[in-house]
Image 1 (cartoon, one colour):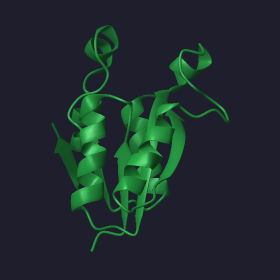
Image 2: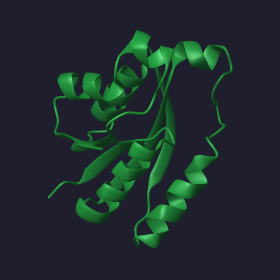
Image 3: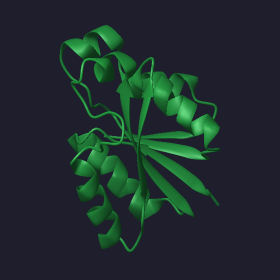
Length: 131
């Protein structure tokens, strides 16, 4: 049985679908939802940083409660969203990652590439991609 699941979240529809999937179909003792940000984004104040948390974390906790589950939430920073996700997964002994098929859009996605693809390609644990 999987013990610790990581769900990267950016408040996109695919990320919300991944959360629903993890809560409904993946038995786990712990579910952690992370909002991964690039150090550069945090430095320029375009996203939350420090002790702040994104507003959608309240919705995440509510969704978990509707499924009779609880989730941990955290914001992680790294040299890129994929790096931050993978570093957290390693440090916290995560057993599997469940994530949306896409999140970032526009120029940042073109320049940085798909976070889901980078995580899937580099992860040493199972990754489930939810459309």
